[in-house]
Image (cartoon, rainbow, N blue to C red; front, side, top):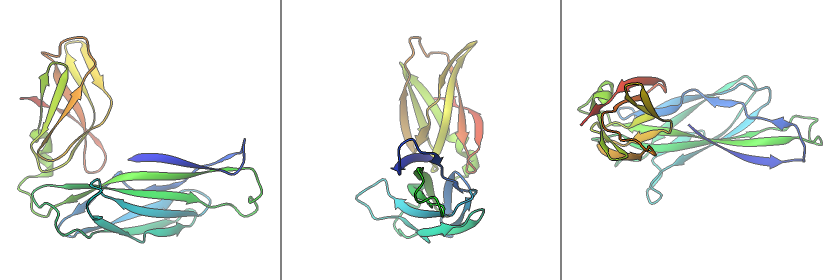
Length: 229
């Protein structure tokens, strides 16, 4: 999940009022057989909040692939709100997953009686991945780890994803005896694709094995050993 802050200054040297609405889950995976999914927002704060949702297509030239209903809503304190995410694009690939994004912006309310007080409010925009999974794929998502491999080219690690699913690696480590080279940035591998990571290491990478943390459908980490090919 990506997060950005837009700060609305009501006064200098003001107390900070933070956001409190959370989405249950770190990603949205839509079953192509249903073409929709219901998600849940929860307001853990003590003030109402206004939420605005926007669909994002990485391909700016294409149409928006899905719609969220409702797109704008208010959540009372300690309450929840369900939102239906529905696929509207009929021409998505059927042999692999498609990746989009959903932004949701929280606009905090001003507590009655605080209108004239010096306070600083945060308008927080969150971004989550929306993955559309076709109904019939000749491959199980449980076998993604076996479809991932890597090879070493000088100081580069070339990852390969031979599956029709998006593979998200949170971090990885190269290990050789008691030596470890760690990479803490995420790596996203599109279906049937390769991705290169350049390591700033002064030593040769020959003989190292690679261990990675793969993010599963539930947002949890799974430790895997990748095969070198």
